[in-house]
Length: 247
Ligand SMILES: C[S@@+](CC[C@H](N)C(=O)[O-])C[C@H]1O[C@@H](n2cnc3c(N)ncnc32)[C@H](O)[C@@H]1O
Image (tube, rainbow, N blue to C red):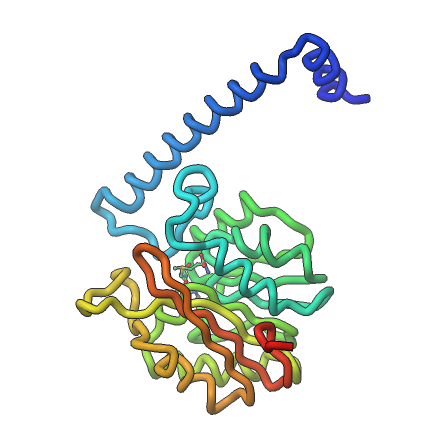
């Protein structure tokens, strides 16, 4: 038995479980406080303006529901081919590649054009199945064919012309029955942007669908609502079955 197991035995014999629970409760409170503080520095204190990506440790340790990152990870994980190869575009901090996707796959290439995001991912989410790369997807995409391409919380960071071109290029990187999946946000009713880096916010499911339909036989788009967001999720593929088919 290792040190922790020996210590656990003694602690239990001494009825010390409640002390350990109290210690963990205190650590969680401190952690929530320091992560909230990090959020205020990064997102509520200018200059400089907030980054283009969110450190999802802030969700994990402080703001569990903010921005619905778990929903994103979960819905794209549903589309993954077990043991397949995936490409995550605009991966940001690498949280989802590491916590939601890598386990199902043999390999995942996760790219972002922000060097700081990739540095953060390499530092915090080391996994032999994941390779993080700096890449501006407007100019190139990683080589090879992928069973899944994931594009979460990022399609709205491109102009309409860029989105149309990117989807045509993405299609060329997918295997014959590969699936493109992802998430975006619906524009606010008052027309203000949710983030200063957003180039094009979608008005509806139909508005999003029109970009995929020219390239894919099957497109599934569905929506969810959270307190501050109207969310759109998509699956696009040439295969006959998609994750939310009734059968
Ligand atoms: C809101 S973040 C989403 C990050 C992550 N996918 C998530 O769901 O948390 C948008 C990401 O798109 C990246 N991005 C924007 N334009 C890009 C481009 N041209 N090439 C690659 N990444 C880009 C940003 O650096 C940022 O990390």
